[in-house]
Length: 253
Image (tube, rainbow, N blue to C red; front, side):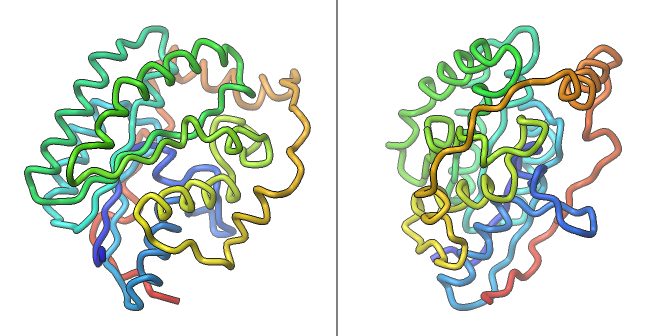
């Protein structure tokens, strides 16, 4: 049973898309911490070092050692989504970075939760290109599921999670329903019960949503600002710090 959990990554792990009334974000990692606490029937320590916009290199360089130093029982590691959206991506070099990071976590005696991000490519421009990259990267890492001390959760190939009902208006980040489904996938992978009150099974059983269209308003509100940041070397995570940098208690209720 895990009594402490730390998460590193980008916007997917930070929880972007699952915004709370006060402007903060929640997300799947928060849900997982809650599920672990309920299973343990006691508060657990939970830290989330993820920052939106981070590519895989900065995640490893800026977050990995800090997370290992917290000495959690469980450390989740995800990244590469922002690399995938760049003009070029070397999937094998990216996979090598993943493997090296996984080994560093295992060497510290920490159980690794490695997970692929959800797949937005049915809804975004140039989706087929990004889908191919994600599929190749996932395939290059799937054998890690057999490594002792590693739990691999493959959200990229969760077909139901591609339904538009799980995505926020920018179609790049999951909404609250999507984050809850990822948390359900994670807890199932860890052999931890999924709380019934999340309603994940009921949502999955409902009819699929209608396929969305990328209108001119969508491009103005989401795509063009993203392109602008790329052209000027800016990131959505510039100036941001981790939302939960230390292991803080997550209650069991």
